[in-house]
Length: 313
Length: 261
Image (cartoon, rainbow over all chains, first blue to last red; front, top):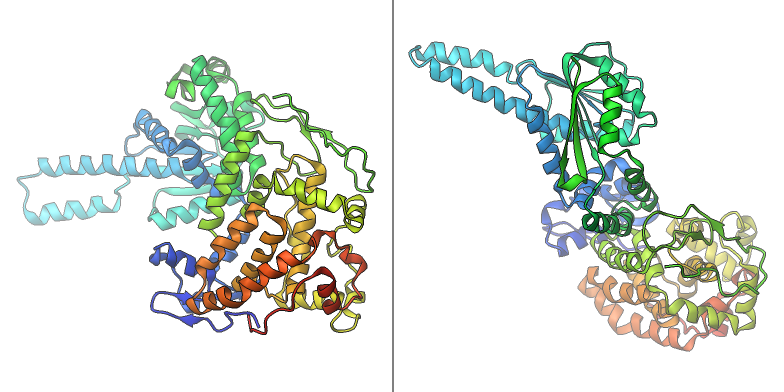
Protein backbone atom coordinates (compact mmCIF):
# COMPACT_ATOMS: atom_id res chain seq x y z
CA UNK A 1 0.00 0.00 0.00
CA UNK A 2 1.07 3.64 0.00
CA UNK A 3 4.11 4.38 2.10
CA UNK A 4 3.60 6.29 5.28
CA UNK A 5 0.66 4.47 6.84
CA UNK A 6 2.98 3.86 9.78
CA UNK A 7 5.35 6.79 9.61
CA UNK A 8 8.79 6.31 11.07
CA UNK A 9 9.56 8.52 14.02
CA UNK A 10 12.81 10.37 14.23
CA UNK A 11 14.09 12.61 16.95
CA UNK A 12 13.29 15.63 14.86
CA UNK A 13 9.97 14.84 13.28
CA UNK A 14 8.10 12.45 11.13
CA UNK A 15 9.95 10.75 8.32
CA UNK A 16 7.52 9.90 5.60
CA UNK A 17 5.55 13.12 5.83
CA UNK A 18 6.79 15.06 2.82
CA UNK A 19 5.94 18.41 4.27
CA UNK A 20 7.75 17.84 7.55
CA UNK A 21 10.69 16.22 5.79
CA UNK A 22 10.98 19.20 3.50
CA UNK A 23 10.69 21.67 6.37
CA UNK A 24 13.42 19.73 8.15
CA UNK A 25 15.60 19.81 5.06
CA UNK A 26 15.15 23.58 4.94
CA UNK A 27 16.33 23.83 8.53
CA UNK A 28 13.03 25.06 9.99
CA UNK A 29 12.97 22.53 12.79
CA UNK A 30 10.58 24.54 14.90
CA UNK A 31 7.81 23.99 12.37
CA UNK A 32 7.94 20.21 12.35
CA UNK A 33 4.87 18.56 13.79
CA UNK A 34 4.95 15.63 16.16
CA UNK A 35 3.74 12.22 15.03
CA UNK A 36 0.51 12.52 16.97
CA UNK A 37 -0.31 15.74 15.13
CA UNK A 38 -0.37 13.92 11.83
CA UNK A 39 -3.46 12.40 10.39
CA UNK A 40 -4.63 10.84 7.19
CA UNK A 41 -6.26 13.22 4.76
CA UNK A 42 -8.18 11.67 1.92
CA UNK A 43 -6.34 12.60 -1.20
CA UNK A 44 -2.76 12.06 -0.10
CA UNK A 45 -1.41 9.18 1.84
CA UNK A 46 -0.03 11.06 4.82
CA UNK A 47 -0.42 14.57 5.93
CA UNK A 48 -0.36 17.13 8.66
CA UNK A 49 -2.78 19.91 9.64
CA UNK A 50 -0.98 22.37 7.42
CA UNK A 51 -2.38 20.56 4.45
CA UNK A 52 -5.90 20.88 5.81
CA UNK A 53 -5.37 24.58 6.33
CA UNK A 54 -3.96 24.89 2.88
CA UNK A 55 -7.14 23.54 1.41
CA UNK A 56 -8.94 26.64 2.63
CA UNK A 57 -6.04 28.68 1.34
CA UNK A 58 -7.99 30.29 -1.42
CA UNK A 59 -9.72 32.77 0.84
CA UNK A 60 -8.00 36.12 0.59
CA UNK A 61 -8.35 36.76 4.32
CA UNK A 62 -5.71 34.28 5.32
CA UNK A 63 -3.16 35.69 2.91
CA UNK A 64 -4.11 39.29 3.36
CA UNK A 65 -1.23 40.29 5.62
CA UNK A 66 1.36 38.33 3.68
CA UNK A 67 0.16 39.89 0.45
CA UNK A 68 0.31 43.37 1.93
CA UNK A 69 3.88 42.80 3.01
CA UNK A 70 4.87 41.39 -0.35
CA UNK A 71 3.15 43.97 -2.51
CA UNK A 72 4.39 46.97 -0.58
CA UNK A 73 7.68 45.36 0.52
CA UNK A 74 6.65 45.95 4.11
CA UNK A 75 6.18 49.69 3.63
CA UNK A 76 2.47 49.51 4.50
CA UNK A 77 3.57 49.14 8.13
CA UNK A 78 5.32 52.48 7.96
CA UNK A 79 2.25 54.10 6.41
CA UNK A 80 0.07 52.81 9.21
CA UNK A 81 2.58 53.98 11.83
CA UNK A 82 2.50 57.46 10.29
CA UNK A 83 -1.31 57.42 10.44
CA UNK A 84 -1.16 56.56 14.13
CA UNK A 85 1.35 59.32 14.85
CA UNK A 86 -0.84 61.79 13.01
CA UNK A 87 -3.84 60.65 15.06
CA UNK A 88 -1.80 60.97 18.27
CA UNK A 89 -4.55 59.50 20.45
CA UNK A 90 -4.54 60.26 24.13
CA UNK A 91 -5.71 57.73 26.73
CA UNK A 92 -9.48 57.63 26.94
CA UNK A 93 -10.04 57.90 23.17
CA UNK A 94 -12.78 55.88 21.56
CA UNK A 95 -11.77 54.80 18.06
CA UNK A 96 -13.86 53.28 15.30
CA UNK A 97 -11.75 51.50 12.70
CA UNK A 98 -13.87 50.70 9.67
CA UNK A 99 -12.87 48.02 7.16
CA UNK A 100 -10.11 47.17 9.60
CA UNK A 101 -10.69 43.42 9.54
CA UNK A 102 -7.26 42.06 10.34
CA UNK A 103 -6.68 44.61 13.07
CA UNK A 104 -3.51 46.42 11.99
CA UNK A 105 -4.79 49.87 12.98
CA UNK A 106 -6.49 48.62 16.14
CA UNK A 107 -3.33 46.96 17.46
CA UNK A 108 -1.24 50.02 16.71
CA UNK A 109 -3.80 52.17 18.53
CA UNK A 110 -3.65 49.97 21.60
CA UNK A 111 0.15 50.02 21.61
CA UNK A 112 0.23 53.79 21.22
CA UNK A 113 -2.26 54.46 23.98
CA UNK A 114 -0.65 51.88 26.23
CA UNK A 115 2.75 53.53 25.98
CA UNK A 116 1.22 56.98 26.45
CA UNK A 117 -0.50 55.68 29.55
CA UNK A 118 2.73 54.18 30.87
CA UNK A 119 4.52 57.46 30.38
CA UNK A 120 1.78 59.24 32.30
CA UNK A 121 2.06 56.66 35.04
CA UNK A 122 5.80 57.09 35.32
CA UNK A 123 5.34 60.84 35.47
CA UNK A 124 2.85 60.41 38.27
CA UNK A 125 5.17 58.13 40.20
CA UNK A 126 8.01 60.61 39.84
CA UNK A 127 5.77 63.23 41.42
CA UNK A 128 4.95 60.95 44.30
CA UNK A 129 8.48 60.43 45.49
CA UNK A 130 7.70 61.51 49.03
CA UNK A 131 5.06 58.79 49.54
CA UNK A 132 5.74 55.65 51.54
CA UNK A 133 6.53 52.39 49.71
CA UNK A 134 3.15 50.99 50.62
CA UNK A 135 1.24 53.95 49.23
CA UNK A 136 3.23 53.83 46.00
CA UNK A 137 2.62 50.13 45.43
CA UNK A 138 -1.11 50.56 46.12
CA UNK A 139 -1.47 53.34 43.59
CA UNK A 140 0.47 51.23 41.09
CA UNK A 141 -1.93 48.32 41.60
CA UNK A 142 -4.99 50.47 40.86
CA UNK A 143 -3.53 51.93 37.73
CA UNK A 144 -2.29 48.57 36.49
CA UNK A 145 -5.84 47.43 35.94
CA UNK A 146 -6.63 50.24 33.62
CA UNK A 147 -3.46 50.42 31.60
CA UNK A 148 -5.54 51.40 28.62
CA UNK A 149 -7.20 54.18 30.58
CA UNK A 150 -10.69 53.58 29.20
CA UNK A 151 -9.47 53.74 25.60
CA UNK A 152 -11.40 51.51 23.33
CA UNK A 153 -11.28 50.52 19.70
CA UNK A 154 -14.14 49.03 17.75
CA UNK A 155 -13.11 47.19 14.62
CA UNK A 156 -15.89 47.09 12.06
CA UNK A 157 -15.69 45.06 8.85
CA UNK A 158 -18.19 43.78 6.31
CA UNK A 159 -16.35 40.48 5.90
CA UNK A 160 -16.64 37.72 8.50
CA UNK A 161 -13.45 36.02 7.37
CA UNK A 162 -11.40 39.16 7.83
CA UNK A 163 -12.79 39.66 11.34
CA UNK A 164 -11.98 36.08 12.14
CA UNK A 165 -8.38 36.54 11.05
CA UNK A 166 -8.23 39.71 13.13
CA UNK A 167 -9.56 38.00 16.24
CA UNK A 168 -7.06 35.17 15.84
CA UNK A 169 -4.25 37.66 15.48
CA UNK A 170 -5.39 39.49 18.58
CA UNK A 171 -5.37 36.28 20.56
CA UNK A 172 -2.01 35.25 19.18
CA UNK A 173 -0.43 38.63 19.95
CA UNK A 174 -2.06 38.90 23.38
CA UNK A 175 -4.48 41.78 22.84
CA UNK A 176 -7.59 41.32 24.93
CA UNK A 177 -8.88 44.47 26.59
CA UNK A 178 -10.36 47.48 24.92
CA UNK A 179 -11.02 45.69 21.65
CA UNK A 180 -14.37 44.82 20.05
CA UNK A 181 -15.15 43.25 16.69
CA UNK A 182 -18.35 44.20 14.87
CA UNK A 183 -19.70 43.00 11.56
CA UNK A 184 -21.01 45.99 9.66
CA UNK A 185 -21.27 47.93 6.42
CA UNK A 186 -19.45 51.25 6.07
CA UNK A 187 -22.40 52.67 4.13
CA UNK A 188 -24.76 51.86 6.98
CA UNK A 189 -22.97 51.60 10.29
CA UNK A 190 -24.66 49.80 13.21
CA UNK A 191 -23.82 52.56 15.67
CA UNK A 192 -25.61 55.51 17.22
CA UNK A 193 -24.93 59.14 16.32
CA UNK A 194 -22.14 61.07 18.00
CA UNK A 195 -20.39 58.11 19.52
CA UNK A 196 -16.72 58.04 18.54
CA UNK A 197 -13.75 60.35 19.00
CA UNK A 198 -11.89 59.15 15.94
CA UNK A 199 -12.97 57.32 12.78
CA UNK A 200 -10.36 55.64 10.63
CA UNK A 201 -10.61 53.75 7.40
CA UNK A 202 -7.31 52.34 6.14
CA UNK A 203 -7.24 50.90 2.60
CA UNK A 204 -10.95 50.24 2.82
CA UNK A 205 -12.77 53.20 1.37
CA UNK A 206 -11.65 52.20 -2.10
CA UNK A 207 -13.81 49.08 -1.87
CA UNK A 208 -16.95 50.90 -0.82
CA UNK A 209 -19.55 51.24 -3.57
CA UNK A 210 -20.95 54.58 -2.43
CA UNK A 211 -18.11 56.58 -0.97
CA UNK A 212 -20.41 59.51 -0.30
CA UNK A 213 -22.65 57.36 1.91
CA UNK A 214 -19.67 56.04 3.83
CA UNK A 215 -18.48 59.59 4.44
CA UNK A 216 -21.92 60.62 5.64
CA UNK A 217 -22.01 57.70 8.02
CA UNK A 218 -18.57 58.66 9.29
CA UNK A 219 -19.85 62.15 9.99
CA UNK A 220 -22.89 60.79 11.76
CA UNK A 221 -21.16 58.49 14.22
CA UNK A 222 -18.41 60.93 15.17
CA UNK A 223 -18.81 63.12 18.23
CA UNK A 224 -18.65 66.87 17.71
CA UNK A 225 -14.93 67.61 17.69
CA UNK A 226 -14.27 64.13 16.38
CA UNK A 227 -11.71 63.42 13.69
CA UNK A 228 -12.01 61.56 10.39
CA UNK A 229 -8.86 59.90 9.05
CA UNK A 230 -8.59 58.05 5.78
CA UNK A 231 -5.47 56.22 4.59
CA UNK A 232 -5.74 55.17 0.98
CA UNK A 233 -3.91 54.69 -2.28
CA UNK A 234 -4.00 57.84 -4.31
CA UNK A 235 -2.56 59.46 -7.42
CA UNK A 236 1.06 60.01 -8.29
CA UNK A 237 1.65 63.21 -10.19
CA UNK A 238 5.37 62.79 -10.89
CA UNK A 239 5.44 61.33 -14.44
CA UNK A 240 8.53 59.14 -14.08
CA UNK A 241 7.44 57.71 -10.77
CA UNK A 242 3.96 57.23 -12.19
CA UNK A 243 5.31 55.10 -15.06
CA UNK A 244 7.38 52.95 -12.69
CA UNK A 245 4.45 52.61 -10.34
CA UNK A 246 2.17 51.53 -13.21
CA UNK A 247 4.73 49.02 -14.39
CA UNK A 248 5.08 47.55 -10.93
CA UNK A 249 1.32 47.55 -10.31
CA UNK A 250 0.28 45.89 -13.53
CA UNK A 251 3.21 43.57 -14.12
CA UNK A 252 4.26 42.46 -10.66
CA UNK A 253 1.28 42.65 -8.32
CA UNK A 254 -1.00 40.18 -10.11
CA UNK A 255 1.94 37.77 -10.33
CA UNK A 256 2.45 38.11 -6.57
CA UNK A 257 -1.24 37.47 -6.10
CA UNK A 258 -1.04 34.27 -8.14
CA UNK A 259 2.14 32.97 -6.53
CA UNK A 260 1.34 33.85 -2.92
CA UNK A 261 -2.43 33.71 -2.72
CA UNK A 262 -3.28 31.63 -5.82
CA UNK A 263 -5.52 34.49 -6.89
CA UNK A 264 -4.52 36.57 -9.91
CA UNK A 265 -7.90 38.12 -10.54
CA UNK A 266 -8.42 39.71 -7.11
CA UNK A 267 -5.09 41.48 -7.29
CA UNK A 268 -5.60 42.57 -10.89
CA UNK A 269 -8.89 44.01 -9.68
CA UNK A 270 -7.12 45.72 -6.78
CA UNK A 271 -4.66 47.45 -9.09
CA UNK A 272 -7.44 48.63 -11.37
CA UNK A 273 -9.56 49.87 -8.47
CA UNK A 274 -6.64 51.98 -7.30
CA UNK A 275 -6.51 53.63 -10.74
CA UNK A 276 -10.25 54.31 -10.66
CA UNK A 277 -10.25 55.85 -7.19
CA UNK A 278 -10.66 59.66 -7.01
CA UNK A 279 -7.43 61.62 -6.69
CA UNK A 280 -6.47 63.66 -3.64
CA UNK A 281 -8.34 66.89 -4.39
CA UNK A 282 -11.50 65.11 -5.48
CA UNK A 283 -11.60 63.02 -2.33
CA UNK A 284 -11.00 66.15 -0.28
CA UNK A 285 -14.03 67.75 -1.92
CA UNK A 286 -16.16 64.69 -1.20
CA UNK A 287 -15.14 64.76 2.46
CA UNK A 288 -16.06 68.42 2.66
CA UNK A 289 -19.42 67.64 1.06
CA UNK A 290 -20.17 65.24 3.88
CA UNK A 291 -19.88 68.11 6.32
CA UNK A 292 -16.32 67.84 7.58
CA UNK A 293 -14.27 70.97 8.18
CA UNK A 294 -10.55 71.71 8.11
CA UNK A 295 -10.17 68.95 5.55
CA UNK A 296 -6.61 68.34 4.45
CA UNK A 297 -4.42 65.62 3.00
CA UNK A 298 -0.84 64.50 3.34
CA UNK A 299 0.90 62.62 0.52
CA UNK A 300 3.13 59.74 1.45
CA UNK A 301 5.72 58.47 -1.04
CA UNK A 302 4.85 61.15 -3.61
CA UNK A 303 1.16 60.30 -3.66
CA UNK A 304 1.22 56.53 -3.83
CA UNK A 305 -0.67 56.80 -0.56
CA UNK A 306 -2.46 59.77 1.00
CA UNK A 307 -3.87 60.46 4.46
CA UNK A 308 -6.99 62.62 4.38
CA UNK A 309 -8.12 64.25 7.60
CA UNK A 310 -11.26 66.17 8.55
CA UNK A 311 -13.06 67.33 11.68
CA UNK A 312 -16.68 67.36 12.71
CA UNK A 313 -17.01 70.76 14.30
CA UNK B 1 2.30 45.23 -27.71
CA UNK B 2 -0.42 44.79 -30.29
CA UNK B 3 0.65 41.25 -31.00
CA UNK B 4 -2.12 39.09 -32.35
CA UNK B 5 -2.96 36.27 -30.02
CA UNK B 6 -5.48 34.53 -32.24
CA UNK B 7 -4.79 30.80 -32.53
CA UNK B 8 -2.85 29.77 -35.55
CA UNK B 9 -4.69 26.54 -36.23
CA UNK B 10 -7.91 28.24 -37.19
CA UNK B 11 -8.62 25.60 -39.82
CA UNK B 12 -9.18 22.69 -37.44
CA UNK B 13 -12.83 22.08 -36.76
CA UNK B 14 -13.52 20.72 -33.31
CA UNK B 15 -16.61 20.26 -31.22
CA UNK B 16 -15.16 22.20 -28.35
CA UNK B 17 -13.79 25.10 -30.35
CA UNK B 18 -14.04 28.10 -28.08
CA UNK B 19 -14.70 31.59 -29.44
CA UNK B 20 -12.26 34.31 -28.51
CA UNK B 21 -14.01 36.41 -25.89
CA UNK B 22 -12.87 40.00 -25.70
CA UNK B 23 -12.46 41.33 -22.18
CA UNK B 24 -12.09 44.99 -21.39
CA UNK B 25 -8.69 46.18 -22.53
CA UNK B 26 -6.61 47.03 -19.55
CA UNK B 27 -5.25 50.47 -18.95
CA UNK B 28 -1.92 48.89 -18.06
CA UNK B 29 0.95 48.30 -20.44
CA UNK B 30 1.55 45.46 -22.87
CA UNK B 31 -0.97 42.72 -22.40
CA UNK B 32 -3.06 40.92 -24.97
CA UNK B 33 -6.63 42.10 -24.76
CA UNK B 34 -8.42 38.93 -25.73
CA UNK B 35 -9.37 35.96 -23.65
CA UNK B 36 -8.88 32.93 -25.88
CA UNK B 37 -10.68 30.36 -23.76
CA UNK B 38 -12.58 30.38 -20.47
CA UNK B 39 -10.10 30.85 -17.67
CA UNK B 40 -7.45 32.34 -19.92
CA UNK B 41 -5.47 35.20 -18.39
CA UNK B 42 -3.43 37.07 -21.04
CA UNK B 43 0.04 37.86 -19.79
CA UNK B 44 2.98 39.87 -21.02
CA UNK B 45 6.41 38.26 -21.48
CA UNK B 46 7.63 39.97 -18.30
CA UNK B 47 4.71 38.59 -16.33
CA UNK B 48 5.38 35.10 -17.68
CA UNK B 49 9.01 35.32 -16.63
CA UNK B 50 8.05 36.53 -13.15
CA UNK B 51 5.42 33.81 -12.89
CA UNK B 52 7.89 31.12 -13.93
CA UNK B 53 10.41 32.25 -11.32
CA UNK B 54 7.84 32.79 -8.59
CA UNK B 55 6.02 29.52 -9.17
CA UNK B 56 9.29 27.55 -9.26
CA UNK B 57 10.29 29.02 -5.92
CA UNK B 58 6.88 28.53 -4.36
CA UNK B 59 6.55 24.95 -5.61
CA UNK B 60 9.84 24.09 -3.91
CA UNK B 61 9.11 26.07 -0.76
CA UNK B 62 5.65 24.65 -0.22
CA UNK B 63 5.28 21.22 -1.80
CA UNK B 64 1.51 21.29 -1.38
CA UNK B 65 1.06 24.12 -3.84
CA UNK B 66 0.09 21.96 -6.79
CA UNK B 67 -1.30 25.02 -8.52
CA UNK B 68 2.23 26.44 -8.65
CA UNK B 69 3.51 23.32 -10.36
CA UNK B 70 0.74 23.77 -12.93
CA UNK B 71 1.61 27.44 -13.46
CA UNK B 72 5.28 26.55 -13.86
CA UNK B 73 4.37 24.03 -16.52
CA UNK B 74 2.31 26.57 -18.44
CA UNK B 75 4.81 29.40 -18.33
CA UNK B 76 7.83 27.30 -19.29
CA UNK B 77 6.20 25.07 -21.86
CA UNK B 78 6.51 27.44 -24.82
CA UNK B 79 8.89 25.14 -26.68
CA UNK B 80 7.75 21.74 -25.50
CA UNK B 81 4.03 22.29 -25.99
CA UNK B 82 4.15 23.16 -29.71
CA UNK B 83 6.39 20.17 -30.30
CA UNK B 84 3.94 17.93 -28.48
CA UNK B 85 1.10 19.35 -30.51
CA UNK B 86 2.98 18.65 -33.71
CA UNK B 87 3.62 15.07 -32.63
CA UNK B 88 -0.11 14.72 -32.10
CA UNK B 89 -0.97 16.31 -35.42
CA UNK B 90 1.25 13.95 -37.37
CA UNK B 91 -0.21 10.82 -35.81
CA UNK B 92 -3.63 9.56 -36.87
CA UNK B 93 -4.91 8.88 -33.35
CA UNK B 94 -3.36 12.04 -31.97
CA UNK B 95 -4.90 14.08 -34.75
CA UNK B 96 -8.31 12.68 -33.88
CA UNK B 97 -7.80 13.61 -30.25
CA UNK B 98 -6.93 17.17 -31.25
CA UNK B 99 -10.07 17.35 -33.33
CA UNK B 100 -12.50 15.77 -30.91
CA UNK B 101 -10.98 17.22 -27.72
CA UNK B 102 -12.07 14.47 -25.29
CA UNK B 103 -11.93 15.28 -21.59
CA UNK B 104 -11.34 12.81 -18.77
CA UNK B 105 -13.55 13.77 -15.88
CA UNK B 106 -16.11 12.20 -13.64
CA UNK B 107 -18.98 13.61 -15.66
CA UNK B 108 -17.71 12.03 -18.89
CA UNK B 109 -16.61 8.69 -17.43
CA UNK B 110 -19.10 5.91 -16.90
CA UNK B 111 -17.68 4.70 -13.58
CA UNK B 112 -20.02 1.76 -13.11
CA UNK B 113 -19.24 0.45 -16.58
CA UNK B 114 -15.51 0.74 -15.96
CA UNK B 115 -15.82 -1.04 -12.65
CA UNK B 116 -17.65 -3.86 -14.40
CA UNK B 117 -14.78 -4.49 -16.79
CA UNK B 118 -12.55 -7.56 -16.23
CA UNK B 119 -9.51 -7.29 -13.96
CA UNK B 120 -6.39 -6.30 -15.80
CA UNK B 121 -8.20 -4.14 -18.29
CA UNK B 122 -7.27 -0.48 -18.53
CA UNK B 123 -10.65 0.76 -17.34
CA UNK B 124 -10.81 -1.55 -14.32
CA UNK B 125 -7.23 -0.85 -13.25
CA UNK B 126 -7.72 2.90 -13.71
CA UNK B 127 -10.78 2.91 -11.46
CA UNK B 128 -8.91 0.74 -8.96
CA UNK B 129 -6.05 3.23 -8.98
CA UNK B 130 -8.45 6.14 -8.35
CA UNK B 131 -10.08 4.31 -5.46
CA UNK B 132 -6.88 3.02 -3.84
CA UNK B 133 -5.20 6.38 -3.89
CA UNK B 134 -8.39 8.33 -3.28
CA UNK B 135 -7.88 10.73 -6.15
CA UNK B 136 -10.33 12.11 -8.64
CA UNK B 137 -9.77 13.14 -12.24
CA UNK B 138 -11.55 16.41 -11.53
CA UNK B 139 -8.79 17.93 -9.47
CA UNK B 140 -6.69 18.93 -12.46
CA UNK B 141 -6.25 22.66 -12.82
CA UNK B 142 -7.45 24.22 -16.07
CA UNK B 143 -4.75 26.16 -17.91
CA UNK B 144 -4.62 29.93 -17.45
CA UNK B 145 -1.42 31.30 -18.93
CA UNK B 146 -1.09 29.43 -22.21
CA UNK B 147 -1.61 31.92 -25.02
CA UNK B 148 -2.86 29.47 -27.60
CA UNK B 149 -6.15 27.73 -27.35
CA UNK B 150 -4.98 24.47 -28.89
CA UNK B 151 -1.84 24.34 -26.76
CA UNK B 152 -4.07 24.95 -23.74
CA UNK B 153 -5.91 21.78 -24.69
CA UNK B 154 -2.63 19.89 -25.13
CA UNK B 155 -1.50 20.75 -21.62
CA UNK B 156 -4.93 19.99 -20.25
CA UNK B 157 -4.81 16.58 -21.96
CA UNK B 158 -1.35 15.95 -20.51
CA UNK B 159 -2.65 16.70 -17.01
CA UNK B 160 -5.69 14.48 -17.38
CA UNK B 161 -3.64 11.62 -18.78
CA UNK B 162 -1.29 11.77 -15.77
CA UNK B 163 -3.40 9.39 -13.69
CA UNK B 164 -3.44 6.95 -16.57
CA UNK B 165 0.35 7.14 -16.56
CA UNK B 166 0.28 6.06 -12.94
CA UNK B 167 -1.91 3.13 -13.93
CA UNK B 168 0.24 2.09 -16.89
CA UNK B 169 3.48 2.41 -14.95
CA UNK B 170 1.99 0.81 -11.85
CA UNK B 171 3.10 3.64 -9.59
CA UNK B 172 1.08 4.86 -6.57
CA UNK B 173 0.65 8.53 -5.68
CA UNK B 174 3.22 8.65 -2.89
CA UNK B 175 6.39 10.69 -3.26
CA UNK B 176 8.41 7.88 -4.80
CA UNK B 177 5.72 6.97 -7.31
CA UNK B 178 5.25 10.59 -8.36
CA UNK B 179 8.97 11.03 -8.94
CA UNK B 180 9.12 7.94 -11.14
CA UNK B 181 6.18 9.14 -13.22
CA UNK B 182 7.83 12.57 -13.50
CA UNK B 183 11.00 10.98 -14.90
CA UNK B 184 8.97 9.09 -17.46
CA UNK B 185 7.02 12.21 -18.41
CA UNK B 186 10.18 14.31 -18.59
CA UNK B 187 11.65 11.97 -21.18
CA UNK B 188 8.36 11.72 -23.05
CA UNK B 189 7.27 15.35 -23.16
CA UNK B 190 10.38 17.41 -22.53
CA UNK B 191 8.32 19.82 -20.44
CA UNK B 192 10.68 21.82 -18.21
CA UNK B 193 8.27 21.42 -15.32
CA UNK B 194 8.61 17.63 -15.54
CA UNK B 195 12.38 17.89 -15.73
CA UNK B 196 12.49 20.12 -12.65
CA UNK B 197 10.10 17.88 -10.78
CA UNK B 198 12.16 14.84 -11.69
CA UNK B 199 15.37 16.53 -10.59
CA UNK B 200 14.12 18.08 -7.34
CA UNK B 201 11.53 15.53 -6.29
CA UNK B 202 14.02 12.98 -4.93
CA UNK B 203 15.44 15.54 -2.49
CA UNK B 204 12.80 14.67 0.06
CA UNK B 205 13.24 10.92 -0.04
CA UNK B 206 15.00 8.71 2.46
CA UNK B 207 18.34 7.14 1.59
CA UNK B 208 16.88 3.68 1.12
CA UNK B 209 14.22 4.94 -1.26
CA UNK B 210 16.80 7.00 -3.14
CA UNK B 211 18.84 3.88 -3.68
CA UNK B 212 15.89 1.96 -5.09
CA UNK B 213 15.04 4.96 -7.21
CA UNK B 214 18.50 5.39 -8.63
CA UNK B 215 19.34 1.75 -9.25
CA UNK B 216 16.06 0.34 -10.53
CA UNK B 217 13.19 2.75 -11.02
CA UNK B 218 14.75 5.69 -12.82
CA UNK B 219 16.66 3.61 -15.36
CA UNK B 220 13.49 1.72 -16.12
CA UNK B 221 11.48 4.95 -16.40
CA UNK B 222 14.03 6.46 -18.77
CA UNK B 223 14.26 3.34 -20.93
CA UNK B 224 10.49 3.09 -21.14
CA UNK B 225 10.12 6.78 -21.83
CA UNK B 226 12.54 6.66 -24.72
CA UNK B 227 11.16 3.47 -26.15
CA UNK B 228 7.50 4.35 -25.86
CA UNK B 229 5.40 6.18 -28.40
CA UNK B 230 4.06 9.58 -27.46
CA UNK B 231 1.61 8.97 -24.63
CA UNK B 232 -0.64 11.76 -25.81
CA UNK B 233 -1.26 9.91 -29.04
CA UNK B 234 -3.37 7.24 -27.43
CA UNK B 235 -7.13 7.64 -27.40
CA UNK B 236 -7.52 6.09 -23.94
CA UNK B 237 -11.27 6.58 -23.84
CA UNK B 238 -11.63 4.08 -26.67
CA UNK B 239 -9.40 1.49 -25.06
CA UNK B 240 -10.94 0.86 -21.67
CA UNK B 241 -11.45 -2.82 -22.45
CA UNK B 242 -7.88 -3.36 -23.59
CA UNK B 243 -5.72 -5.22 -21.05
CA UNK B 244 -3.05 -3.06 -19.43
CA UNK B 245 -0.30 -5.51 -20.40
CA UNK B 246 -1.27 -5.38 -24.05
CA UNK B 247 -1.50 -1.59 -24.02
CA UNK B 248 1.92 -1.37 -22.40
CA UNK B 249 3.40 -3.54 -25.12
CA UNK B 250 1.70 -1.52 -27.82
CA UNK B 251 2.96 1.77 -26.49
CA UNK B 252 6.41 0.42 -25.68
CA UNK B 253 6.50 0.68 -21.89
CA UNK B 254 8.66 -2.05 -20.35
CA UNK B 255 7.14 -4.10 -17.51
CA UNK B 256 7.65 -2.35 -14.14
CA UNK B 257 10.36 -3.76 -11.84
CA UNK B 258 9.03 -6.05 -9.12
CA UNK B 259 9.53 -3.65 -6.22
CA UNK B 260 7.08 -2.56 -3.59
CA UNK B 261 6.80 1.21 -4.00
